[in-house]
Length: 338
Image (cartoon, rainbow, N blue to C red; front, top):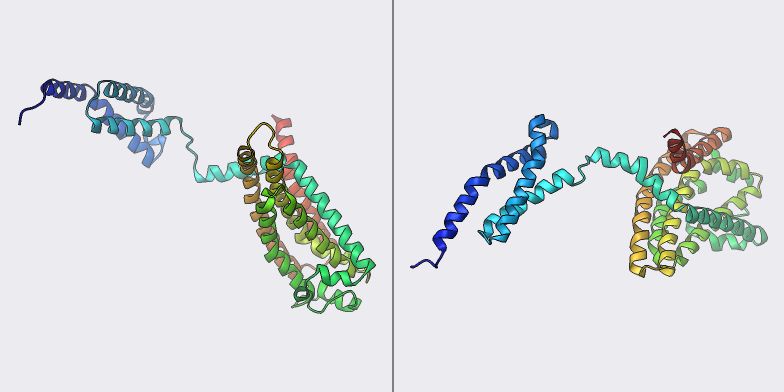
């Protein structure tokens, strides 16, 4: 079999090219393998300084190989080597611990601050719903059964005696309020996810879910307040409620941000507006899940071990102060110190 014209010259050119530069490629590859498996401290100062020089040498070799149409396998090797070098020298290299720290110290609080209008709108909707639920049950007791599911009520209703209602505040056990607390813990996660996920429908479902959640709280509060136990119920609920309700408000705010971005995209397309809003909303929702888990822990411990109204309000108020400071004040203080 005869070789095409110029084959010997091409082979000689390729062999000469490899002979001149292959040592640098191998040295660069070896250094990358060491720092990828271990850490930059595995290299000496001289080796660290040689990395960018070897990277530029590999880029130059790749440019020549492409321009002269040398061996395709060699081009593929140099492309992979240069890509590894680029990601190491210029890519983000953060450990898992660093990423977690960045999330809690910057990403999550920044996302909540970015949603501040929607968060306060969600809080206002919760208050409006609670007032409406309280007023509806106060004006007609039949509204209670319409707002609170019979399976959840467990026979407790506006006609229950003060002694019965008080016993479930301080007596523990399988009582109405214990069931109500379990309902809040298990269903508020679903409620938060729905308030977020359904926000794409121009935020209308998110608004309705937040209103209904407030209405349910108002209805349960009315039957206790009517028996002179409103203060006691508020203390019991505040242990976990300040964290839980704040988390739900944030979830509703995330859904509203996506919905309003789709409804009013401005100069962007609806998809682009939803994508931009979704990045902030998704970051907020990761934190919401953790807040709900923490609220469940507070609720489980608080219901069984804390019976002092003052202690209950202190814990609930302290948690509310913590979340407000963490989301809205910490950044301000840090800037002030900087």
